[in-house]
Image 1 (tube, helix red, strand yellow):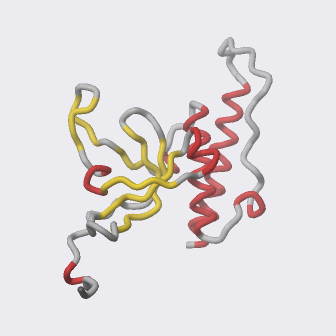
Image 2 (cartoon, helix red, strand yellow; image 1 turned 90 degrees about the vertical axis):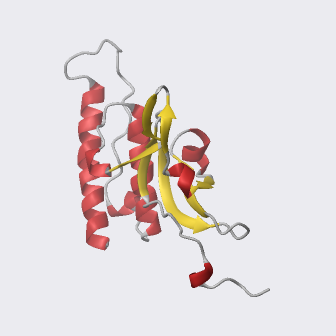
Length: 161
């Protein structure tokens, strides 16, 4: 049997690389669309930006058609995953902050840039919050500082593209 040529392959149904959020709330970093060597089906290659995926960077694949699918989830018609522009992601919770930092670090690493040395490190998480929701809370300062780090990281990545 001869290997298939590009003309013999089914359409790939590519998923654009980027930062995605699942309808259940988890963040994901889509790296590429690849092809299964057995079925020739397009597969979305991604990593979870929470839990084990955030800590160890494990990679996963899912059929691209399923990744890009819309359906009735949680009782409403919606996409399974929604792509988000890193510059526009609202910063207001720690899981989102962690996902954004991991996504930008991964993107930089894939471009041969170490953000930790090319920029100042992202701001440290506060340790002194009293939990009362005060005006001027340390978390407000953290998210504002993270916003500026994000802008610097995106500018560095754009200049390196």
